[in-house]
Amino acid sequence: KKISGVLLLALLVCTLFAGCSIETIQSKEEESKYNFYYLNTNETRLKSEPYEPEEEKKEYMVKALIQKLGSRETPEDGISLLPEKVSISSYDLQDKLLIIDFSKEYNNMSKVREIMTRAGIVQTLLQAPDIAKIRFTVAGQALKDSRNEEIGEMTSKTFAEYSGKDTE
Image (cartoon, rainbow, N blue to C red; front, side, top):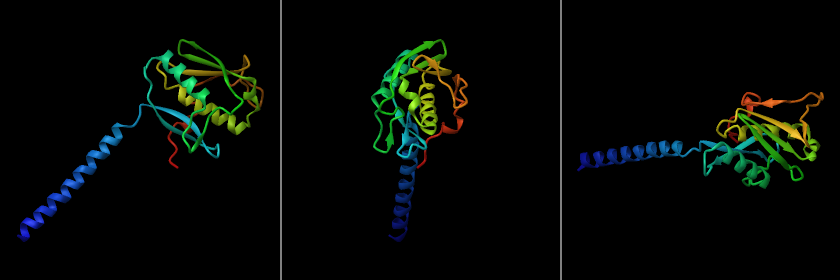
């Protein structure tokens, strides 16, 4: 009886460990291929949530992601990338380049918020198939930095330090 009790206990422990490892593998498989970025409540870090497009086509994903940005949907622990008064006036797809034109209120953001907003939008939209570069304009004019120089085209390397998920 003692031996069968020990064997039963060992079998139970092995079953428990096997169940845990299967669950871990499944949760890794459930990670999303795409993410939608937003700001933490302090506006100091990018956070992300899984995003599942209905279609994985460039035109569809760009339109859907821009609409989601404009709707300002975010989880409870975050803030929309676009401040309340800033809107996307238009966008233009030119081969692998996406040009996004913002309302003039874009220029009223603090520098830190503007950089975080830009990083989040670029990271979000570069996930669309065949989009390699993004350029921002404000009221039809090229976006400029604090030295009045055009920022130009941004790629995945422009904001490399923001590409990971926030671990907070």
